[in-house]
Image (tube, rainbow, N blue to C red; front, side, top):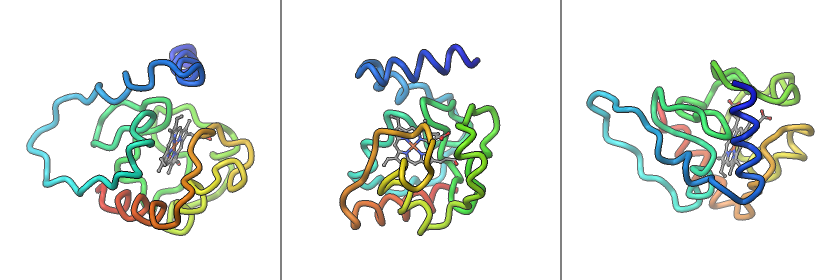
Length: 132
Ligand code: HEC
């Protein structure tokens, strides 16, 4: 498991196969109407699935993340930093994290995205709140 995870992480770090992780969504029964995906979320889907039961990618599946304690999705190998952060994903915490992950949770292994636009951060946080 860990080895697989590391390979995934490395392939993305190398600028490689991020697109692979968008595809693997197992069939689910009768989905509800899906909330509109804000354009700024496009950068997140390389690493995060958003449908119930879909496999974790480089990052954990974000379905139902709003209101949850950070670092607690089952079967995902989080950094100790995020697990020990004691955060709960309120809207404000999600906005802070995607504005600057490394500053908000020093030691987090989510490195890549800093969402520069406040409007984009708000749109993403509101979108994540609808994933339930
Ligand atoms: C390059 C891959 C990558 C991208 C792109 C990425 N993430 Fe992440 N994300 C991660 C990883 C890895 C973690 C786990 C961090 C840890 O364990 O420290 C994570 C964790 C998270 C968490 C915490 C989940 C939890 O269970 O506590 C949230 C929320 C999140 N990401 C949101 C986003 C959003 C929103 C975007 C787009 C703006 C995004 N991520 C883009 C890799 C990524």
